Length: 251
Image (cartoon, rainbow, N blue to C red; front, side, top):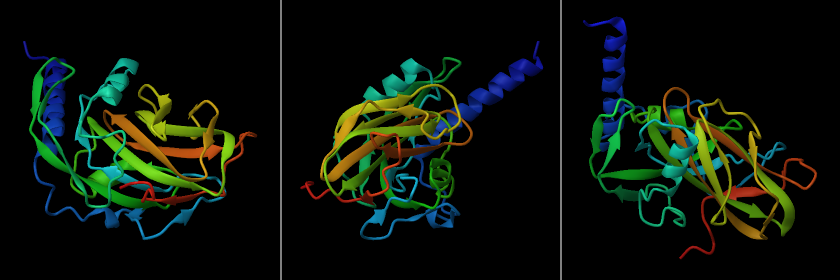
């Protein structure tokens, strides 16, 4: 007997499959592009200063990668340790750079196998007009999927001098993992809305000059965004930092 619940489950499974496989296709040619977003703009040249609240507002973000939509602790850990592309934990890309991600299989929440084809994904340099990085807009205005996806992002935080006792404070929708200068420092687990300073790292030291901040955000459905800032030893926002998208040490 076909019940409303069975119809709903079948529809959900179809939507999952569509969302997971769509990134292997070309972007929607009718999509207006990131510049159409009211809160994201293509990044300008040079550096931008942190505002009084200290939020990181300049990022390089990779096109959304197909994920299985799970945001449990174990699923987020699995996404953070999966090798999607070469040198993913050390690369400092440039706007427009592409990476090739080899095809792989996903299993939907109802157990169906979904094949993701080998495809190229592009890095985009963006500036945020608000405290948060709106990943939904980054995907939507390019005609890319916004659900059951994984986002990678990176930026360069420039410090005028060495600052010890600072902490990276982040929030995300949904789960996320964060690295500073190659070391994992904090994470957000579960299906939740972005909350400022939701997860705060242990105390660490910002080097004088360039510091690389990297994130992975795992999303299932709905809104997807994140925010990050550094707090000083007194838990006050560090506002004397600047953000660029070029690491002077990169070859």
